[in-house]
Image (cartoon, rainbow, N blue to C red; front, side, top):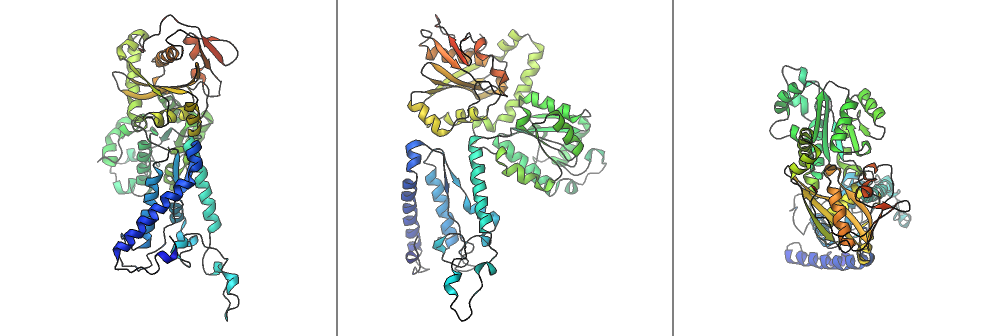
Amino acid sequence: MREHTYFRMQYDDEATYRDLFERCREGMRDLLDAAMRYHKAAGILTFVTNFLVPQRNPMGLLLPKYDLRNPVYFMSELNRALSEELANYRNSYILDVDEISATFGRRHAQDDGLWTIAHGSTIADFDSPNDQDRIEPPDAIEQYYDLRVGQFLAAVWREAEASFDVVRQTDNIKIVIVDLDYTLWRGVLAEMDEINIIDAIEGWPLGLIEALLFLKRRGVLLGLVSKNDPERIAEIWPRVLGDGILQLADFASTRINWRPKNENVGEILREVNLLPGNALFLDDNPVEREAVSQAFPEIRTLGRDHYYWRRILLWAPELQVPTISQESARRTEMVQAQAEREEARGRLSRGEFIASLNIQIEMMVIDDVSATHFGRCFELINKTNQFNTSGKRWTDQECVDLFKRGGRFYAFSVKDRFSSHGLVAVGVTLDNTIGQFVMSCRVVGLDVEIAAIAAISGALGNAGASPVRALTMDTSANLLSRDLYSRCGFTQGAPGIWVKAPQSSTPTLNAAE
């Protein structure tokens, strides 16, 4: 939008402003299409910056705010339109420089306090030398404005790095385990006869609670570890956190007892099938944090600086996800169903237990990144550590290339009498080779992997008529999957290469068999 397009516009001519907006939107669409040429050719991961929204409405403080005649609203709507246009491109995301500027402080970075709105850039000192022949030469611009442009641009770069880590799910945290006293609420409430709710949770504790619920919606599991009497906590919980604020059922696993916390944390990690490196422990007591850290050196901890807790939980890239799948949104309920399943396992023999589950497995073949279930497959491959035969992380671009060469994802969804697990396993194949197999740890022990590998082998080997290869690579985390192919009837040749001879028939998709 050039200056001459709006300098002479009349304020009472609203139609002219609407027409200008549509022309700007159309021009933006064309510029975006040209800028995305590399993305369209190769599917390369792309971040698109949005526009800096002006600091104030130049027409005046009391003039209509949500009106295209207000440049603040005009630019905000253009950013919304940009987001809508970008939704047409896969593997592309908004890098929200406007939000960074707003959080950082627009007056420290943006130039519309001095130059034209259409310039839409950062403020700098380059004007000053041109004005030194004035009767009263001015000081440098930085003497009038508190310039923090360098810090702002550094923040933009850090945001780009963090966004990249979120997309790749680098070093992600899958469970947050919290304490109660002086952590989720103020004080030792179990010892109080009269509990003042305002004193207990108003302010930062309520902010922490809200942050935990946002994490749960993202698919991050919540755990609770507290040295308390479980009956007393169950009694006071509705009084302190009732009315739907936070429920004990929101926690995938709880340990409220007088045992050492490091033991309880270990039990929770085993129950939810997660590694310490994928966990965050939040406790106000440095002794408890040290004990947990000594027991699990890879676990992350938060403690003393409780005024930072909410900020870290909501903004740290390790706790964010690029998309939210149905499986992610239901992760807590799935883990809780797993506890019921384990209780049933303890009462029955293995054969009786597997048969009692009435497991049903559905296989889906995915050969395009636009396929409905590709997003969940991509998420599962890049988040799974323990049952992952190679540990490879994929980019969207690599998936596009694989599918162009005839590769496929074989995806498996599972349900039993307790719950629907959703899409929990993926085999990555090319020609007659299984290059990688990943499976969610919540179905470990149900023989899902046996049925899945049999189905993939049958598909790749023309229903058992040709040999099938499988490749593996040991990592520090994938102990669970190292014997997969030996259990599935493959023979190891060279290190990391397994072969299965042709079969006379292909097993059906039934884990119980």
